[in-house]
Image (tube, rainbow, N blue to C red):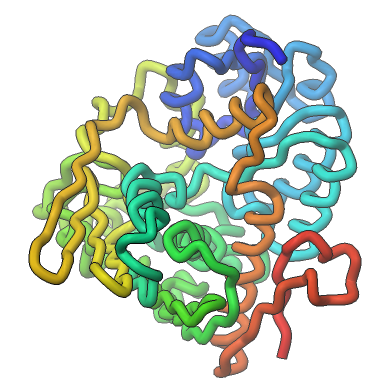
Length: 406
């Protein structure tokens, strides 16, 4: 055990890194020790701003002894291979959601963490949001009774933000399910705190110019009888931040008059390919000084209402309302010190103090199994059951990963 800052290497200097950058540079127990990215302009900026080395290949980064852990923020398709390589090189791993785009890859990643004795965490996701954690703690006290129903919905312009081709290719994990339902599933799992049981879902593919899953509606059930209704649309019409007092997903005040801005920018703003437009929001085009003003509110993933036996809880961007039988109480949260600090803190605790994180490899695999079930349910137009693999004979699945069954 050491009190020295944890040396973290960054795999992929893209948009995810930009969003998590404030927590990485602001946490006293983290030291950015290196990076890997194929883009020379991003590497040059990184070396200039962080005064440490960058590499064109993962092998180069993993050969750097200053790197104790890696934050894998690369495109989804690379997560499994890069995670397993890092674990086998003796590095701890924080991998962006989704953990991977197939359950088999997720299981291989979790098995690699077990085999090497290294920490594997999945995140950041909105399951780490402070209002979600506060609501989960209030429920865990027991005086509100058992969770019976969660209603969660989010309407955004996801599909009309600049995308790489694979992000609109369902066969490569594109669309809103792997990118966005992972958030919803993590949120409701934290709140219900029970084993997943089944999924009945429909997905929407409504724009032939961007043909992929752009919306979903799903009923997720849990052991003990709880259920969660989750709904999402990325088609850029109604904005459910209206239900969050016009606070954006990233905790910033939002102008309701900016209606349709994403569609307008995409169709009218420039003739540049979308991949070029996306890189304008990534590290390289932006740097450490290009962060937005500190958020006054906590990050969120839309409207969430939890119905327990003795009360309802409504999550907001600055706390949790508890509606009891005769009164309502607001549990306020202090303003956030920095966004996305919770997964960074969990990583440090896991590596330095041996505390098992909630969002470990098995957790991430279960969330992807639920995403798989959501897609399969929509295709087959029926309920898909998820059985605890501990009851299954497949030893690879013997540590709590769920799988679909008929």
